Image 1 (cartoon, rainbow, N blue to C red):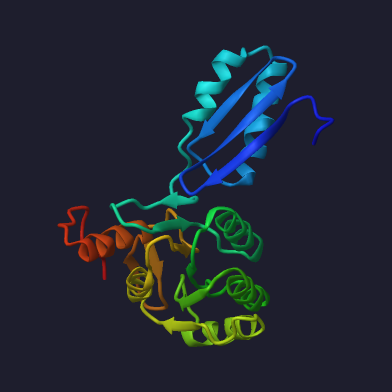
Image 2: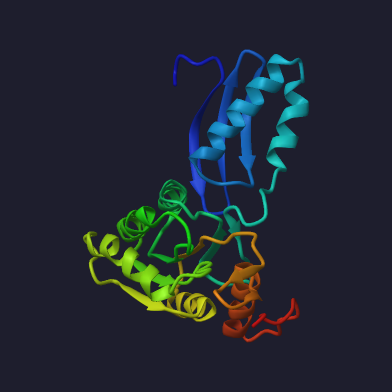
Length: 241
């Protein structure tokens, strides 16, 4: 806001970060963050203001804030040299998914392809809203398993679908029971400038089914699939089954 003592202007949001100019009673200058999204601007202003009030100098604050690279599995970009963006995020609630997709819309130059699911043995009333949010903000959705736990995955899909069907992009989604195949399909579909969001599991390195728990990491899966698409060797480890 213009009346705030510490405020940002000239905000430019990109897929690889955000830049803005800060004005304050303690100093002013350009910030170039490694994090993206409007929420990163708000968080930076809050942290900067607190630090300045506590007597930490402007010169100390700026490089520290600019060098924050984020938390594993939270809006984590997967870079393998591809000409489109792949993001893994822990968003597994309606609010979380909407916040992430709104952030992506701030910099997306082309299509948004969202891979998501809903956990089993959890609040079923959130499933249709998850589908509606994914459909509202995405050009194409791929519905897949999250952690089904003791539930039948197809029942979970059935609960999500009414939300997807309420959106204007009705019908623009597919279902894959296998999460690895779902991620592979998203990567295969992606073209230059697209954004692929793999939502729901973030930093998790497992997937829970009724009869077993397997090793599964969205980030490793994405890197392996991207490496195959780009014709490179992948050495981070094999997919667990």
